[in-house]
Amino acid sequence: MDVVSDAISTVRLGRPSSSRVRVSGSWCTRLAPYDGAGFHVVLEGGCWLLPDGGAPVSLGAGDAVLLPHGTGHVIADSPVDAVAVERAVPFERWLDGTGPSRPRAGSGGVEMVCGKYRLDRSRVHPLMAELPEVVHLPNRVGSHPELRAVVDLLGRELGEQRPGSCMAVPGLLDLFLIYVLRSWMAEGTAGAWPAVLGDPVAAAALRALHSDPSAPWTNDRLAAEAGVSRPTLARRFTTLVGRPPVAYLTWWRLTLAATLLRDTPDPLAAIARRVGYGTPYALSHAFSREFGISPGRYRAEAAGRVAAG
Image (tube, rainbow, N blue to C red; front, top):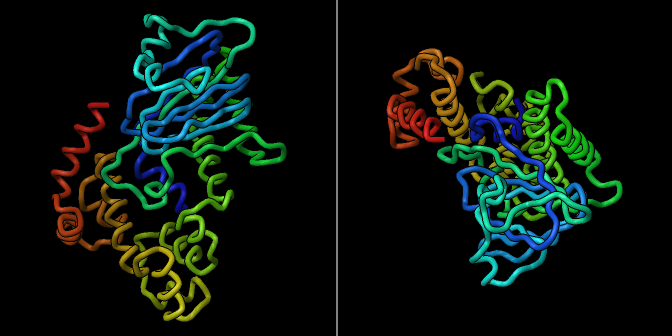
């Protein structure tokens, strides 16, 4: 796999969820902080997003916004004041129509897709960790065509009960997340990882490590993959990534082992082979040293987090 795909797969749990809503009149609803990532896509009209502790964000038709750290926020028809924010109806009550202020169909107003991804934050790749609280991608002519296409398809699938939509919608939501991350990196915003993946030396070494983490990688072999000398690789990689290549490999192998412990019933011996450790004892020792918990206990605790939803 590649770095972005791996960064997503190590934290994602279950299937994403979403709802398509049309709202008119005066409205204000609150989404509580969430152990995952929330998103909104405005299909028609406009509204405001007010993240906890952040500045209001105006959203227009075609805009996409991701809250990758599950930041609590309010969405409303206007940039409401603090009193209105305190009185905002919880999103679940507002969506099912049991709250005092409820979405209603009608002419005008705003139509949007709201949803969230479940994430396991116990082992987060630094690419995901450095994302800002709010990733806002305004709809600009000619910008991010892949993201625009996914937004159009998602709106259609959620607006019509088409055959196969139960499979199509989760797949489109996965694509949406990938294209948001790509678009954020392409925007050239502040952050280390757009620079890391844009550097030919660091990116080549990372591609090699992520495509075959169990291989017997050495600094010399990685330097050959990147087409540079070993000192050049060590200098460029460490400066950009924040740790030497082999140290990153060790961390990634153990992070991948944690993901396999969480997502599969595979025995420790099989997981050890997949991540480049010769014996389950060697993996267990390294895992405990790195994370301060044994693989068995980690698996049990991860099962509890998944079950809790």
